[in-house]
Image (cartoon, rainbow, N blue to C red; front, side, top):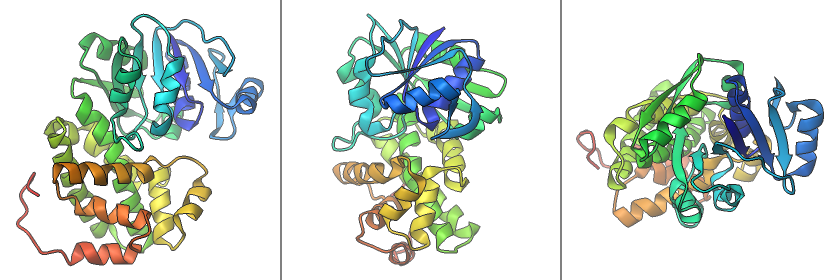
Length: 329
């Protein structure tokens, strides 16, 4: 296949390398001409994914370059940039796979909804799972879910990405797959925060269990399915993101727990941590649907400066105890 990856950060570069290793021709699109020139010259993404050679089958391109015709468009930019970048997509019925994990700032829209609004004739799918970029390019075995309402589109996405180290499952639960991928970033910030405060694995286990409960409630209210949140795109991605120091969101949370400000934490990682903006979108969606999400609310309150990490923990621990029943608020 011929593929164009929109987004030349760590995630976009990792997907471009994966596609090239699978035998496809890939155009890797970025908005920064200096960054793209460096990729062309050095065949390595020193800024975001150092230490890994970019195969010759990958052609870095930027604004002003003619994007070659392609069979597959991969959107791998931060969620706030999706609406603008999908205008690079051309073709009568283009196949677009969304690898961005977040909700649009301001509207709270799923990125698939944004894509359909801007590209009403596109065949749209989402790709999500426990997929840390550096482990993808190292060839560490993992899995993902290709979700689309169009089964042939999901099959084409699987065919493009599937290989010996990257197993791809199919789903038609686009809402569930996208929400799981977005919401786990917020919980990863909370998990990092707990570690930064010096708490143990008991704390993190309880936090993630209750957080998973809350994200599943919201997912069901928005049309997702339970099995998606219990699967590779749900629990699988949540675990990888919430326990790994490779995770940007975890690192932001850990820095907050250790006493840094949000600005200091973001400056340290020098990349987008999707969970920061997603937390605000989730708070709004929960209010609209009247779904109690105390774990997400506590994390969002810390990120917005209304609570310190210690105060957020105290607020959660002092809530009135309830009988545990899955999918009950």
